[in-house]
Length: 203
Image (tube, rainbow, N blue to C red; front, side, top):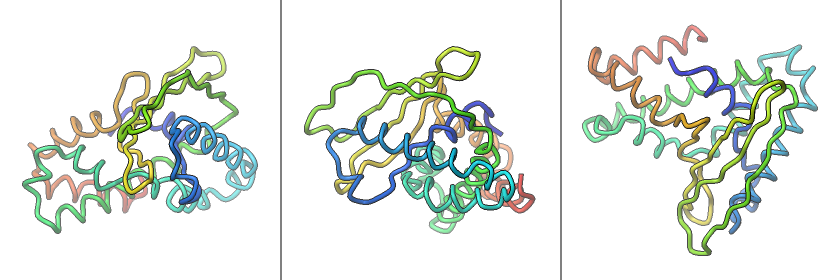
């Protein structure tokens, strides 16, 4: 449904917040760097184990990565005008199925990580900032550096991710365009059914 490179980069260098105390920080870039290094080390350490038992990837992604994103906010942004028109039941169903879709997509591509390096261009964050964009550059073997930007906002002293932009391509914008065209053809209920069917097939 969406560009594989977008997913692959997001999986490889997904922003993971390991503890609540670690999230309450004033320097988002330091947090991105620390937690990215932690997750890459975790993946590398369990590489063979994950290859032997791919099912473990689902729990790794579901339990550690995705809960650190604000899926309510992401869902609002992805559905755009359709969010306001949706019923409470449709909103809940969309969030559930959309989240599972990402879990499966991330889990499928997670095994492709092979030691890519991440750099962090210098940035300044105002003390009272509520929204920030943390920029990183990922150096893949035999290829140029790929810019990956994390959009975060501060909610109750916790930084939450609400979008990721990879080489100029926004995760939210990509899904919004794709889902909007599906909603026009099948309505929101049809989109939710399509995602649910895809999830049930493990695609």
